[in-house]
Image 1: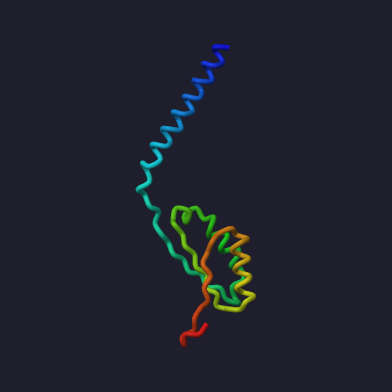
Image 2: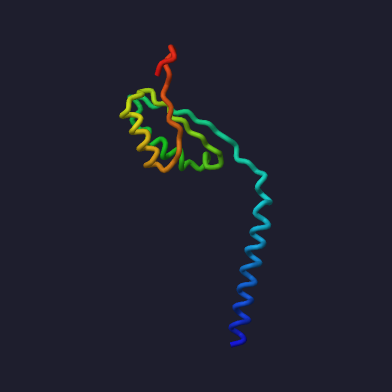
Length: 108
């Protein structure tokens, strides 16, 4: 019985020591900030593969190292296109900004 208690104490002490070392060493590499990348994608009627393009963009290994901010510009600017983009954002489980393109006279 004494061996079981001694083993349990030894295991608990080892787990506690590992947790303490991880806690203390977690702040060591925190000075590195990933580079920021802003990407603007224009969505219009001729763009048939936006869903595929965005899904490939988010899984690209080269872009995973960046703090990526994607903005999708809705050139169609209809309620249906806006709803489709919102559904796409939910489907991809990624947050991207949706904006409507303004014309040269300042109207949407």
